[in-house]
Every structure is written in structure tokens, then in C-alpha cells.
Amino acid sequence: MAKVYVSYNTIISALGFTSKTVVENIHNETSGLQRFHDAAILPNPFYSALIDSEVLETEFQKLGPKSDFTRLEKMMLTALHAVIADSKIELTDRVGLIISTTKGNIDALDSNNPFPPERAYLHTLGNTIRDFFHFKNDAIVVSNACVSGILAVAIAKRYILQNTYDHVFIVSGDMVSQFILSGFNSFQALSSEPCKPYDANRKGINIGEVSAAVLVTKNDTNLVEEAVEILGESSCNDANHISGPSRTGEGLYRSIESALFQSGLKPSEIDFISAHGTATPFNDEMEAIAFNRSNLQQVPVNSLKGYFGHTLGASGLLETIVGMHSLKNNILYASKGFDSLGVSQPLNIIKSTQTVSKLHTFLKTASGFGGCNTAVVFKKITK
Image (cartoon, rainbow, N blue to C red; front, side, top):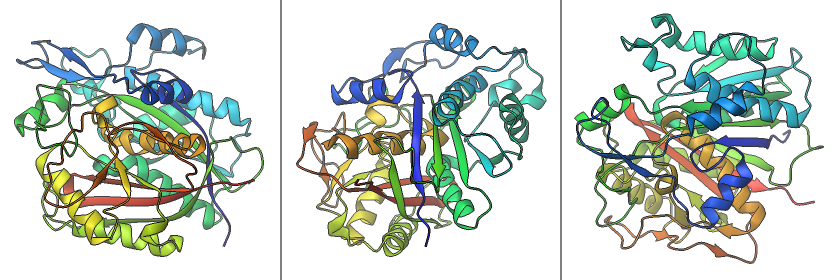
């Protein structure tokens, strides 16, 4: 079977506007989360990681836009432009485009938003990004709750193996809005403190914003140093509840088992897990159960939510990129906010950033509303 790789990448976030800058901040265990109090959005203070609007505008204007774009579009276009430019790939009909997002331009529905409500349609977002770069093919929009970013990687791999495309560009993005914050607040899921995934004293979720982009390709030449091979992937919906995960971890467990089977690896051959880790009681407990069912309880685990908050449909791609750099650097990055285990099953949480002799593989997992779960196994490319 042909091999598929994830190569060129970039991250636009509160921790920087390149993957390298973001990873350096994570290495230093610097969080982008800050305390905000805006009564127009929420009555109570909240923690979030917001992209600097002035820096974003400066970077976006370098692209020479000819019309007006929403904030999310500026985030996504800026991220994708960097990857297209670095890869130097001509956008022929053999090149695909995937957009992954949970809510897209949901703020276009606000009464005071200057854009028409139609801008909130996901296909409009796809067309906007397609037309900006003159892609020959329509954008494929992946909007499957919080697995969207990592599911997009699995879908890109399948398109390439089916010989539909030779290369697929993916751009993920979600932004913090009143709609999203009020929704999680109604669940009583927002934490008034920086989130603490898997910790006994966790109080809930923080919502952040980010845009990330990658190139998925079948070509093994001209790959970046941190490029990885996709060994196995799977997605399973446990159909448990509209917002609550399966109490037995069934969907995530099945996704992990299928991804491992496809990869040909044993649980002991996984060097670390980049987990979902939202710091909510049900999610963290479900993941602990699923990892134990898959005999992964001894594998080092981290959640990156303590650096960015939960960035919704972009989180899976963001965390994949950081995982790629983790493999290249042979460094396990700390699960920020963790102190003592607060789930019923054993987990090997990475408490501090540490250099190890050699990393070869990692497992990326994600879970989301509606019972969706995705797992992907990545391998470092050795030359």
C-alpha cells in the first residue's frame, strides 16, 4: 500500500503565528490562557486564549486581500497561505482542499455583525477559501464537532489512497464567540480557572481559538523535518448522547483498536498519546477507561488544552502538529495544569517537559458531541 505523509504545517494562535514559535512556548510550558471579563459576552470572568487581532490583521494584509473577510477567514487564510507558499505545490486538479471547523462564521448571525447571515453557511466558508487561492476543486467541509481537525487528516489520507488526489491541503479553525461561550456556560462546563485536564481538582473547560494548516501528501520527497507517516486511522460514533460521552469509552476504544490494527503496531509500540483532555469530568474519565481497555495505561499521555484551551474543530489538527514536532525533537511536552490524578483508571500523565532518547510514534485521539471519536497513529520518518 502507498504511504501517506503529513508535512508542511503552521499554527496561528495566542502562542505565536508559526508552528516553531508555538512549540517553543509549549516547551517552556508557557500558556496562552488569560483571564477575561467582558459582560457583553459572559456575565462572569472566563479564561481563554485569544489571537492578537492587530498582529492577525498585519499578517493577513501581507496576502493582499481584495475584499472584506471575517476574523475567522483571516485566521484560516493566513495559516493556509503559509503552507501553500512553503510547499510550492501547484494547485492543479490533483490537489484537494479540506476545511475543518465546528462552528465556522457563527458570529455572522449576531445582530451587530457587519457580514450577511449567509456568511455563516459552511459551504460559503469553503467557497471563500477555495476562491482566494484558486483551488481547482471544491472545498470539502468536515464539521463533526471536536474531532473535525483530526478526522480531516484521516479523510485526506483516504482520498490519496483512493487516487482521488495526490496532495490535500487542510486548514482548521474556530474562534471564540458569544454563541460558543454561552453554549458551554449553559452546560455549566466553563472553568473560572485555567483548565486542568485529568487533575483531581479540575473545574471544567476553557475555550480558545486557533487556526492550523497542513499538507497531506503521497510524495516522500521535499518533506519537512517534522513530517510523519500516517500508519492507521479510524473513527467510530458510540451514539451515546448529544453531548455526553459513552461511560464505557466504547467509541474511543473501538477507534483506537481499529487504528492500531491498521498500523500494525502493538500498544507497547506507541511512544506517547496526544489526547483530547478537555478537563471536564465525563470526558477525562471516558478517555481513561478507553485507554485502559486498549492497554495504553502505561504510555505517556498529555493534553494541550492547558496551553490553548479547547479550540473545538481545530484542536485535533493543532495537537497533531505539536505531536509531529514532539517526535522530531524527541521531547515529551507537559500536560499543563496536571498535578494529581482525578480519574478512576491509571494514566501515565506527562507532568513536566522532558527529553527522551528516541521517539518514533504517537497516537492522536479526539472525541466530541454526538458520540464521535477519532484515533490516528503517526510515525516519524527515518532517513
